[in-house]
Length: 259
Ligand SMILES: NC(=O)c1ccc[n+]([C@@H]2O[C@H](COP(=O)([O-])OP(=O)(O)OC[C@H]3O[C@@H](n4cnc5c(N)ncnc54)[C@H](OP(=O)(O)O)[C@@H]3O)[C@@H](O)[C@H]2O)c1
Image (cartoon, rainbow, N blue to C red):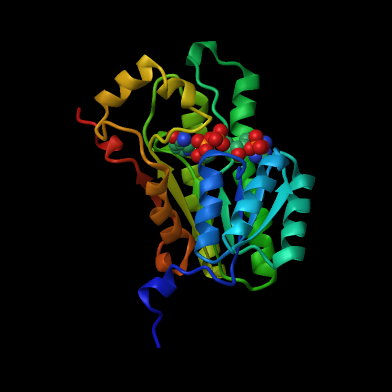
């Protein structure tokens, strides 16, 4: 019998790993995946924050594990996936969410800023996707990879050279590996959020400049973090079983800015 609609969004029995789960969107994604039934592995460098979230998830009846992971360190990534596999089994839902921002004028940028942004926002997405997909293929596990890109991966923004270039790279990486991995039963999609207040941008959105900016953009407000929950689950679960290589904006129409 066909699965019911709610069963298609259900992640019971699946193992999900979220990078950058110690704050902001990543912490929220971890709770959403746990609520959908997945055993969730929370990865980031600030382990004490992860432990607190594990306790919250467990208190709500979910299953979670914290792993200290620096996405720029191959050995640490491998160790994190080993720990996840030992605890729950092969990771079959990967959320590549860890990210950093280094805004500034193109003319003032330097190599350190380029490397800082590209390493975490793009190279690490390649590294971790390869680690996860390799394990899924070896164990014949079907899976889903969701890369957290940005609307800045689809449209340029002033003072965002490094970030927007890295996120555009994430969109193209998503499409390229989706092409290869579909035949291995692994879907790869990108979620492209508009603006949601987190540690990454809180100072700006608390400022007068930030408030003035919000008045000018089509949504005229920030997104509520829970407005990402449905889109994330669609891409992560079998509800999105015929979706791959998609870069999906969730931005209240921000990209529709009138010329
Ligand atoms: N907020 C927005 O409006 C928005 C819009 C579009 C896209 N995004 C994207 O959403 C993702 C999450 O951002 P956020 O807004 O939630 O920002 P955030 O609150 O600053 O969270 C960033 C996360 O990335 C982790 N991280 C950074 N470098 C890492 C490293 N080397 N190894 C492991 N983890 C690392 C941080 O954990 P540790 O420091 O503990 O390691 C933290 O958990 C990013 O990819 C961002 O580009 C955000």
